[in-house]
Structure formats: structure tokens, C-alpha cells
Length: 320
Image (cartoon, rainbow, N blue to C red; front, side):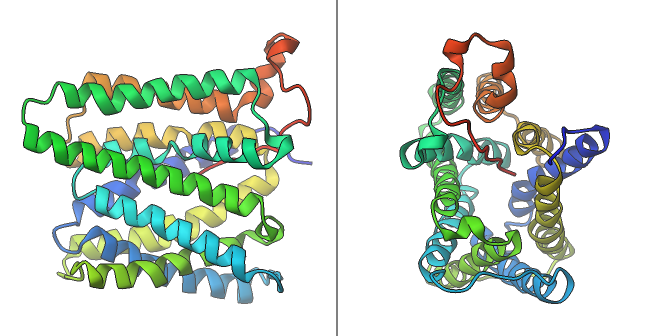
């Protein structure tokens, strides 16, 4: 039986969210020394090897065999597409914008699962959360753009934001691909390995084709790569999966939406970014909407029956 989130779990989630929110900031800060797509390729390859050795020699997980090629390719390709879009988007927009638009992923996952799985159909409460989040996206995306007097900067800024939103959609579809295939029965380390290995196999050639393989071995770049590889892709996700086995997924999912808010804060503090008031308000609406969509199982206990899921209670999904 998974238990409710206690004080210890809440503190761990705060630490995890702070770690995840620094990912785009680390990539953006070291972009002058190595292109984002090249950084993401390198960190994914090393992290994939670390996950493989951990699964085989430490955790000794029994990976599934047979009929895994198609879902592995699908999950790996979508994960690679997500980070290709993120890497290119960071060339145009700020880290704080990127982390907010990337964390729209649960919206796209919820829509995809609503279509594919009968027990994941959205309730009226979740649809209201979706509506609120999409209002927030429109506010964060359009209003700052309308107030920007520099049309040249406006075009690049909106392109970066759009790539971040598409990255969120790719992440959401990765969740759908996992949940609707045999991959849903696989150990977490196997799914994570396929994602990271797919990102490496696709992003490294992409970096070469784009001519973005420069590498200036500065202390900042090495620090960024070590942080992304060891702390984000390896340690934080193993801790996250361990938390999911112990605590209620929906409650952890709600807490995970501290990540985009931390991301905005880090962008301001570390990169001197200055998000507009409209963007901050839009980001808050997005987070509130996502909490409603992902935390419906406990919010519904205070609502009338007409707002609850009419059939097949959700198995719940959570997104780091």
C-alpha cells in the first residue's frame, strides 16, 4: 500500500523540484561553451550507461524481453524529440520561459490518455483545470509578445517559446507511449535507459548535422554536464521512481509542479532574466491548472458527485 505524503517526502520533493528546475538554467548558462543540443546528447549518453550498470549490478532489475523493440524506439524517439526542441528553443528564449512551457507536458499526456485509455477519461474537474492551464499558456505566450516593441526580438522569442511548448507535447506523448504499451510493465530503470539511450543516439547526429559540436572545456561547462548527468538524469530520477513506489503518485505529482515556479526564480536569480508580470501570472495559472488536473483524486473529495469521474477511477500519472 502506498502511503500519503509525509514531511520527509515533502522535503525530498522540494529538493527534487529545485534540482529539475535548474536543468534548463544550467544548459542556458553554459551555452556559450557548448551548444545545448550537444550538451544534452553527451549527458544522455553517459547517464544511460550509468543507469544500465546500476540496473544490472546494483538494483539487479529484471528487464522485460520480447516485443519491446517498437515501444523502446517510440519512447526513445519522443524523448529525443523533446530535448531537441528544448535545446533549440533555449537558443531563442529564456530558461524561465522554457521550464514553464516544458512543464505543460501533463496537459498533453492527460489529453492523449483520455483518448487512448477508458480509465483515464477526464472528469469535469480536470477539464476545468485544463481550461485554466491553457488560459495561462495563452497569457504567458501572447501578452508578453504583444507588449514587445522590438519585432526582431519578438520573432525569436516566440519561436523559442513555441519550441518549448512543442517539447512539452513530446514529453506528454512519451508518457502516453509508455502507458499504452508493454513498457508500462517494465522496471523504471529499463524505461529510463531507453529514453536516455534514444536521446543520445538521435541528438548526437543532430548536433553534428546542425554544426553544433563546439566544446570549450570551461569549469562552467564541466560543472553543468556533471550536474545534468549525475544529479538530474541519474540520481534524481532514481529517487523519484523510489518515491513513486512508496507514496501516492497523485500527491507527488501535485508537489512536482513546484518545478516551473522554481525555474522562474532560478532564471531571475542566476541568469538575471526579467519575466514580465503577464508571464508570471500565466505561469501561476498553468501550475494551478496542472495541480487540478493531476490532483483530482483528492480534490474531488470536497466536490459534488456531478464533478467527479463518472466511471473507472484514474490510476494516476505523475510527471517529474
